[in-house]
Image (tube, rainbow, N blue to C red):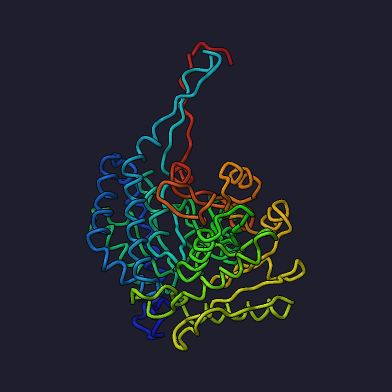
Length: 463
């Protein structure tokens, strides 16, 4: 697991970083535990002050933070700046809402003999966050902000190809005034991850990543009897009904599939179009995709980024090859992408039959699976015919009916007339092989707290 910054556009190795030693891991755990003992007693006002300062710094140095995202994983400059701003908004959400969301809750009791009962929310201690490269700052912010607000502390094991993004976030939090040890970036190895999970001072692990990584870490956490949350990707359905505004729907489809180079858990990966408008949609979609401009992600004219690494691009091309070998049709669209860098030619996959294993894969790149549904009922069936259950969307001119259709799609999130989106004030999470648990809002805030009952009972009350 070599930690290195490799520019996915130029393929240049910019910097490498050594793995953490076991001694460094143990020292980080010691410091985190000592930090927790103080941080859990810190007032909400002081916690909020630190988070607000972090948001201010992110906005002040937005260009610097954004350039690092473009360098390390090839994110378009505009998208990089948007991620920095989203991270700042997440911090501010908890500045404004954490104290209210964590206020003790008086419980209604039927019998006075039950006493005066209340539910209080107490921090647990050290948490381990294992995060991916596709949103290097946002992924940190959406676990760090709520857990610091709750009084917990965090150790970060980030993806090996964004080591500088991980490091600069640790520097950010130190500048914001967070006590030493309350947030630690570690270039940990796989064996050290298990060592951290097994440490009795660690009380939970949050992972965003692949199914394979999630299965391993969830098993380790389960064996250690530690709470875990898992966000493991998806294959979001983009359902197009017959009355959809076609031009706007196609525009959203092109964006929903190709933002961040198509490397988004909630990308619109499966276009499911009712038969009546299928031919119109695919024709316009093909033209829309063909307008994408692949190139230098720092160039404002570029609208299609490279993938995060050469290996990522090779893996997607191999998935396409296997899908075709099992009967799918692949159509490359648009001008040829650059022959250097981690680019994949935008590809439409059609005729992906139910016996084709690719139908149930996640393509993490500019590959669109397009399905012809007989009617609305069939579109819902196809949408639910997936091992994943993260997000999805329904496009229609009848928004009331769209909401009814959304209610029949089995995922953690469904949007009407918009691809699955991420916001500071919306919850995030899925079901089935997309994982379990929720991040953001009060749901994420309370994933790793002790929901403790305190009940004051009259000493003379009967048992």
